[in-house]
Image 1: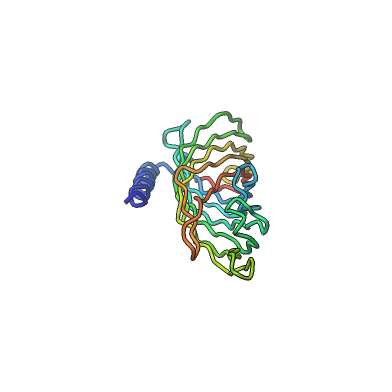
Image 2: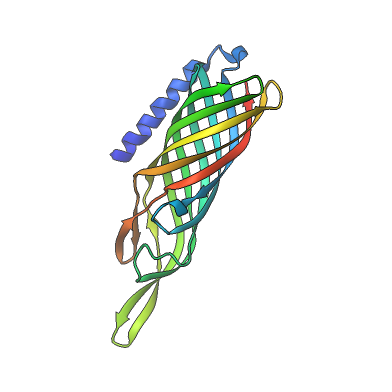
Length: 217
């Protein structure tokens, strides 16, 4: 029920964007932007992930200028750390990656701008649809000593909040390049489970860099 409520909230925010954009195209109130994202999860005390890399697509509307609204959809892969130990010493030899599909909405704040340059602040929510493809070994104790048993991992979906700042550079009237940095933290953590049962909750906390291009219309 909680997940359905989150998705309903995101859908409702997305619906706000559509009517706000009708009849305003000649005022350049709409943007489509696509970017690459590089996540650095080492800022967290959770050591399962080494690095995350993904793509992000946003639709933005500035009908409430200097406040904007955005709807976001992306995909990212999070490489696991082979030597991770935060899930307990009995779990070792991690191998694989975790794929996420973040979908959500943001509020934008136009902080500063000139004809060719602007700075934008973003605060948003992302529902993290999560698919784990991770193998590991579980160390068990038998009469003959310690033995490694192969296992796999499942991770439930989660919810993160983010805060980011972005700089835009105009190439011409309708095309811009942008770059920015931000921080995301977990609001609702997904549970990690193996064949032996549940482990601790997952974390997607990270600093991130994002850069790409925009089309304004």
